[in-house]
Length: 127
Image: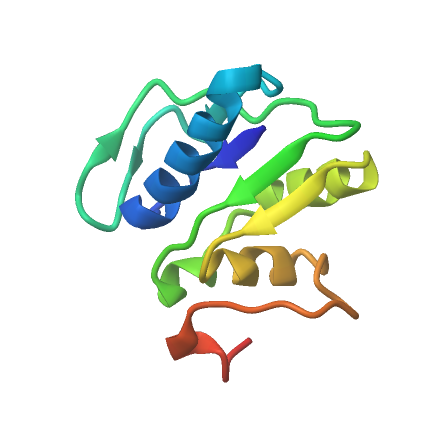
């Protein structure tokens, strides 16, 4: 399970799912949970600096990649290398999930084409 941390990540969008999936994993240890980013340090929208993040790994099989949200403007500045990594992960069989505006990151990668999806209520018109 990979949490993809991008610049301006919303702390709640990262911490909520990370906590829930960590708790679910605690009893059966089914997943290796990694917090990854194209950068070793990322500042959240709330100003918290997240450090010592794992680099983006090779992804295949039944991996789950979670893309937490960020302010809408930040979704418009996603590095092309991240988009390519997500497409490669999806083609390799990974399952992709997003929280709130993380849907825009998946959408920009073309990974939501023809699919039903949702985002934060304040950004449904843009999606």
